[in-house]
Length: 340
Image (cartoon, rainbow, N blue to C red; front, side):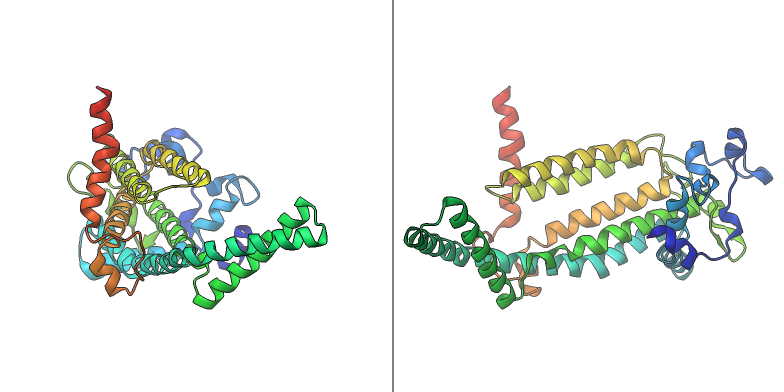
């Protein structure tokens, strides 16, 4: 599908066709510009592989309309705010997370709360249906397999009717993922285009602006963070988000446990990945993760949940933050103390 998009959405952008014939040229830009200190693979455009090669899908993504839209949003934020590029990246991330993902996250909690409140009714239906199927199986001489299939089919239909009645199908809770993940990808690719010189603004290379658009220890946003402070911070915050989610889930199923372990592994793997991309991208990832952590904590507030009209459930607490600290202390600190 992405390959088709490259034909449909591609617009003339001469700077995108970067051909690196010698690895040394990737570290020595023409015109005496400051070296980006990026590895060759990060500087060279994958379009060099050719539209039919392994890089064809990425070329289609990097020149697609959503990525160009993300570039326009970043450029507008930079121009309108007058902030340096590090501030523009932070501002754009905060606005997008606050205006797009926060309402979607509140809607997700709204749906999940309604689904949680249906569980007693679902369990009651399951108990009665099990008894009814057992009686019918005895009367009609059904085998265990037929009785089981009849129970499952009828149960799925009844539960689906409950979701329709209360307008809370669990699939609606996934809308956050379908919006947030593509937005994260488009913004990351847009920043990569900026950092590798594949995008221009009013005749000036954004890459040149990014080389002096950083702050603190990462002055050059096109270079890697050699201190690993930004990559490690991204991994730590993502792990905090995972642990907060895990602590509020009691009696997790085996599948949920596997998913939690998988997301933990991904959070750890993000550290070396973040150490191999330009600091502008890692800064965006760090700010996005921090906003995600803040939103998770905010959505635990009883006052904010009431403001968003999220239904109360039996799992809600009047002191969520105190409970979270107690659970964190019990799982990590107390266990460590008992070990020693």
